[in-house]
Length: 171
Image 1: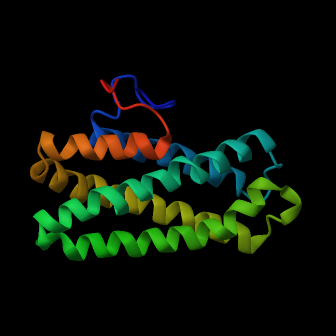
Image 2 (image 1 turned 180 degrees about the vertical axis):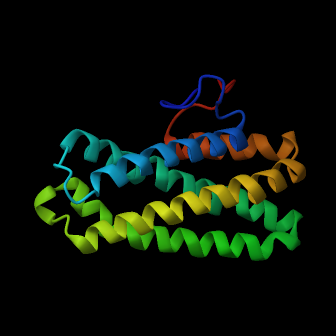
């Protein structure tokens, strides 16, 4: 199954490629969030709802894909990756903390999009972009080098189960 918004050739049977594709969507949604956070930008409820929906669903799934399914596999096979994995988990917690400030201003404009909200949105985007770049440069290459098809199948199946969609080829 191809996930909505995923590039047509990327499916759950290629979980590492799907994680990389998510980074592209993170970049696009952060660009939109940055525009929404500009001081003189009028509130656009449709754009705000798209950003909110993405980070509330796919963003949370992405972190769970990594922390619940990918990182434990890598920890077992590549103890040398422990510092990187620990850093990525710390960054996930910081992104979640920032998102808790940003989300209310997207879900309900009356919740306020003041200077503190704009600053949290800017920090959320900056960390999201840096985090995705680090995963693209270090995590995903290490995972591709380490995990074989026997490990990638269960990873893709777990990602499918998390999203409530069938795994390709599963009857």
